[in-house]
Image 1 (cartoon, rainbow, N blue to C red):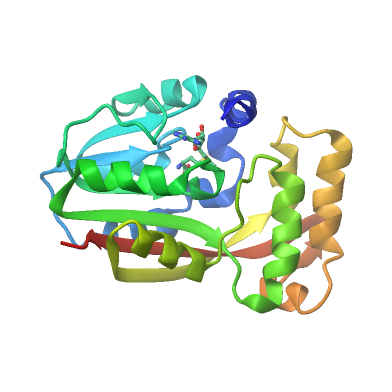
Image 2 (tube, rainbow, N blue to C red):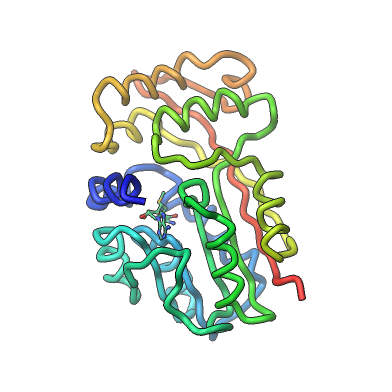
Length: 246
Ligand SMILES: C[S@@+](CC[C@H](N)C(=O)[O-])C[C@H]1O[C@@H](n2cnc3c(N)ncnc32)[C@H](O)[C@@H]1O
């Protein structure tokens, strides 16, 4: 886990503006919408980073607590709601403490995803909602090239998941899928790499090249475009809502 802490300690200051998806209002709203719940109630944001999703649950009237492994990320989230520095695989909460648990864009970093899901299941109320979201390939046609890009950018990536893989992970952990939202968020890859101080200049150039010079059908699927020297592409997102299988 130290590799993850090292990476996000370097990124904490610039994290919130380092990619479009982090603050994309449509993507964040999808996390609230899939819950089909209204406040009041308790929300836990796992691996909350700077708390971008939790902030929006709080603004909607929920009582929010965050957990993140990286101290500097937790400190930032703590400006918006209470955040504990802890690993998500050993949660310092009682059974059935939360109405909603959210985990966005961190599952691929977890050493033992099943253990985190088991902890989420333990602290979620029996009628609670678990929201899991992540970037995934659009299909098997772009999966291999996307995995290459992700592994080049993120040496800390523990496993590359497709939507089907995530469905299987949730099922294995005793959740049943209640809803799925799929959406695309357009990213500026040039700016994403400019905001990646944890990477060497050569590595940043390599990631830019993998997107700018991506082969077909990746180019068409992701709508890769180079405009005024900047590289753009779409990322596919899946947002699951899941219930505890009783
Ligand atoms: C890509 S960021 C996503 C942050 C936030 N969920 C968001 O959507 O903006 C991944 C975060 O997961 C945290 N993380 C990784 N492994 C963790 C673990 N085992 N327990 C708690 N947090 C973890 C990292 O410290 C980092 O802040």
